[in-house]
Image (cartoon, rainbow, N blue to C red; front, side, top):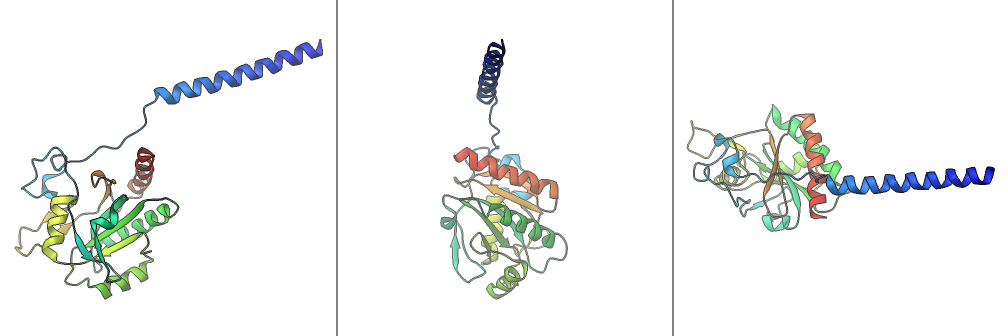
Length: 223
């Protein structure tokens, strides 16, 4: 009697386990994986987009660039080939949102250290002030790891064009004709094909958590 009961319980336990696994497989198969949108200039606040591309609805990608980083090394879009990356625009003397953005980018830096093929990228909107030595001092002070994160400076007109025609994150200063930029708090998530996959408030802790999750979603998309 005892043996019969034991066999029955064993059979029942195995049956339930198999049924659970089958249900889990069906659930995973039927539940669509989350994917991130691909942003086009037409999807973004027109104030942040150059008028020449505000109408674009397809095929937008980050254009080529070449600037100097905090170590005086030339960095171009080729250094980010095959990488997912997070980009922003800042300046070292900013007293308001930039320190918060930098601290949150440091959180992303720590988050990606155990992940492959993810980098960070920051462009100075005041390159006439943010020389290579200034960026180097700033990076050391803040704890920037140059294995993952480049701070770039260069010709202001080229940074301005990149900000408004590629990353879509700075406003035009209507009171100036010298390519002055009113930068936003936006972090931009860029995929390996140089497409924009997300915008995030770099001063908001909740958005930073969303960004971390979206980085993982994008990594899984390539896997």
